[in-house]
Length: 441
Ligand code: SAH
Ligand code: F3S
Picture 1 (spheres, protein in one colour):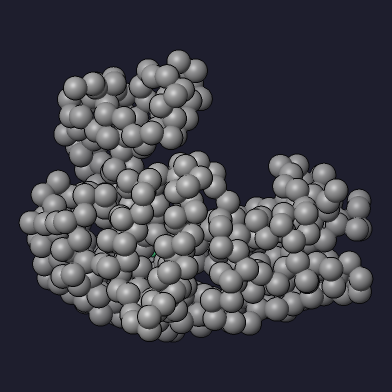
Picture 2 (picture 1 turned 180 degrees about the vertical axis):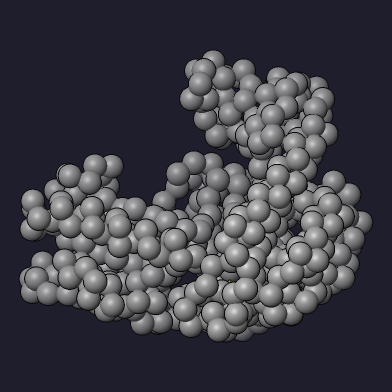
């Protein structure tokens, strides 16, 4: 028996890719997963290059794995994901003990590449972009609970001036609608109750159908909602650009779609949005949110922010802070701007001191945390539908599950409830977690 150890960094797309790698290697090469690096015959690193720090981490990790390979030269080291796609052979130049370099679109070639390395003991590299090929190899993803991620599209065409993704994941391409529905119906039969539709810009989805038509994102959500057993639908990430009225209408007629939306805005200043090449204005964003509130009065919005983008003045930052209050965002992922080689922004003059960038990030995160808490407080005494995920780590008498707006709720219940939706009355409130009691009517 051979064992694989896999480490995954980055976004949900990478998590999804890793689950495909595991399914594939288990099926084709009969490998088993191990949690111990020392036991592994193959070490796989699925990398992220969204920010500089994420990229540097790769070489630190490889340095640690080198020691393992020194002890056992038979161990195969494979590097995949966004850093591998971007750097290609450069990785080998810096770490010549790496055996395999595979890209975000070539992970299905891993079984063949592993056999090749076993025979030749030479570097095997493939970072090409064969469109959607990887999905043909694995239709069912690995289930890790009652909620599953399903990729509906790959890549991004938006070329925001700061972002590396279009270069590492390629241009936008949508998976055929019927493949997605088939994958979800299999997951539903295996007990999955909640689906998270994944893509860099899910709202730009345009998948071909079996009868030669195009299925748009709004239609796809309605079709997923029709699948027996699937009772909750999420998606990530959507873009304010192409967040069209037909998608807003789904919030009116499809209750299975959660009342929670992650819609990255990046900045509250039109000047910065323009420099970022986001192709929308703050007014466009506000107009989407207004319409969403009409369609779904209890909707909560979360977002991504970048602070310290080249040229961001104190006034621009203050505009972001005002915008955060106005929209009353529930949560955020917020980052200090990181210069990515090859992107248009990397040529702009980065005129802001790192101390100042950190100050802005702190102020922004502090404000969002307060808003998160105030949204949580509003939930006190309310009845929430929870998808029960398992037994609480802290107390075996308690179960835990998630609300529509991503809060973890713990409550006393029977293990029979795991994998089911239950109604819980909220009795105690913390920023990201809640406590409650079963509510039976
Ligand atoms: N498709 C999404 C973005 C995906 S990248 C969208 O439309 O916005 C995830 C997040 O990483 C981005 O929203 C951005 O906030 C952050 N990010 C991307 N590139 C970055 C960079 N160069 N520096 C700092 N943060 C970055
Ligand atoms: Fe990146 Fe902009 Fe696309 S942030 S993923 S280029 S929408």
